Amino acid sequence: MEEKVKSGKEILDDFFGNIDNIENVDPKVAQMLNDLYNDGKLTDTNVKNGLQTLRETDVD
View 1: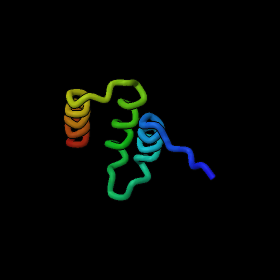
View 2: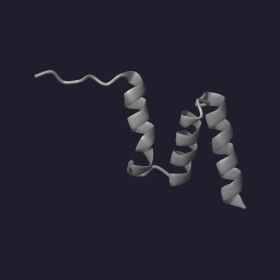
View 3: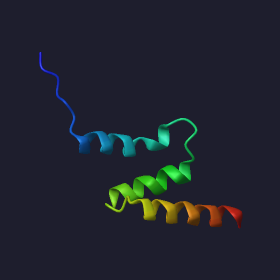
């Protein structure tokens, strides 16, 4: 029996596709990270900017 080994992309797709189901992960943060990943824009700068935006909108 051979088991299929997932590629790195498949593992990341699974992770970001299910990030909102991880315990104690804020749904807004999960959605922001998932969107950045799906848009091919998951960089440290974009994550920092996204978190800053979420902080600013949650305060209001």
